[in-house]
Image (tube, rainbow, N blue to C red; front, side, top):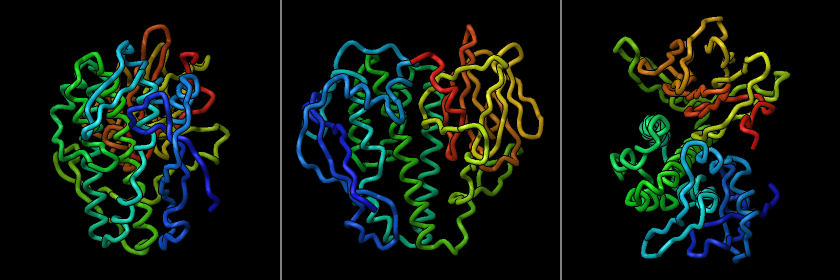
Length: 358
């Protein structure tokens, strides 16, 4: 694997600067399990202009743009204490870019995971799944009531937040900030969910490389009738084949609100994991599954998934559709936005992204 160079902004007392990092395969290609993980070697500081920082924050995941759709931007810089240092960010874009490098699992954590037995990896996967569910519920509630994000975060047991990449300390510091910084709290919540997804993927990759011939763990989750049903915690066959369609499907960034351009027909093709649904956002809003079953949608926010408490409950046979998979917001004037909350992803035609004209 060839060596790559990337630039990233770290949590730093110098918000106008970034660190340049050389990313390399763990152990310079000596990883015996073939897991694609990188160690970051800091090689100095480089000036980083506001324009380049804004472009970087909007490239790829586009978190800052997604948060701006939910919150009014704070006019004050963010300052907080982190492990004895005063950290300052001039804008939400600065903060978004600084967190982007923390959505990936740290190299020393990967090394520790590689030493685990199959049962220990399964327990790790189970733990990640349970924490992800807690944070998906929290994000869904925060999107419905943006002003509640601070109080929702305060209710979270700090022990559920990993110390990896200083996440526990970062979120603990943000919780103490006032309502004027709720957009920063929301952004940290989204980025932490992306970190959890990255950690889950690493666990899945290690398990597949080392113990691929063994059966993955089948856990038990509540069913709609009050019983329980089996669900795969490590599922290696859930990724959709987006290349076989004439539509160029792109995966929505997890947790981020994305505006969608509605075609003249009013019909938007959406993949929930591997399953194709049709979303009709005009006149008679509804979601139609690949069996032709229609699910009515109401104006405003609709949470879609397998959980019986959702606004739209899809059939239980869609095992790789998450309990809370997708949030659909049907606004006035033909506006549509989607927020992916899922494990296996939500996919939309790339030509429909950016419906607000950004």
